[in-house]
Image 1: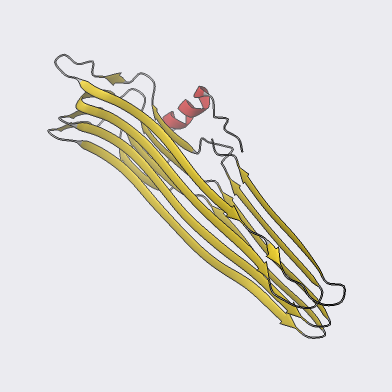
Image 2: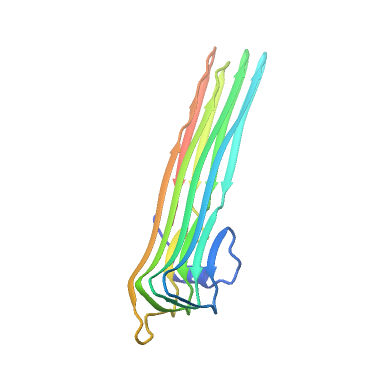
Amino acid sequence: MSGAGKDSAAIMSAVNSTAPTVGTEAAIESGSVITAGGDIAVTANENVEVDIIVGGAAAGFVGIGAGISVLNVAANATAHAAGTLSAGGDITVQAVLSEDVEVLGFAGAAGFVGLGAAVVVINDTSTAAAYIEAGSDIVSAPASLFLPTNTKYHRRDRPGSGRGGRGRASFVKINVGNDSVTDTSALIGSNVDIGQAEDNTVGNISVNAVSTISAHAEANGISAGIGAFSTNFALVDITSR
């Protein structure tokens, strides 16, 4: 597990980029002028649920069965605000990403010579970000300026090999992390004016990025017969930044 983060230059480059956002996006674009007597809220909320069952079976004098599942997940939730914003209450820019992924792979083989293999691989490069764009003007938010980013990942991967003649192998690997960008981020861009106008105030300022990852990898195999063997591997690699 690595907790290393990107440097400020890399983060600001992503914030100031004009490239279109891929995924779920909520935004107040640059140049906007918004005045609200109550709250201003910008929320991007993405929920991903994946359930996969994959398997194979074979029988005969020579039986070979295989169940293989490879899943790539690249979800994205982005919330950002720019322009001139005046609120009578809170200003909230929030990104929420929730993922629940469960994969079951199994294989069975029966015969004088039976070979079974179950393989499950998950690669997750999902991201979530909430930010105030560079050059924005937050005129007033008497209650608070709040930028929360929350990500919740739940992974459960279970390859199982059925019963049969001689050999069984189970392999599971979970990769969570994105090497090109910060996975979970909340920030205020450069040159942002906050509560600088006369007779206007901004209350509390809160910038929070929270990532919760739950990963369970289980590998098991059953073999029976003369010369039977079973080999199992379970690997979890989390490099969230």
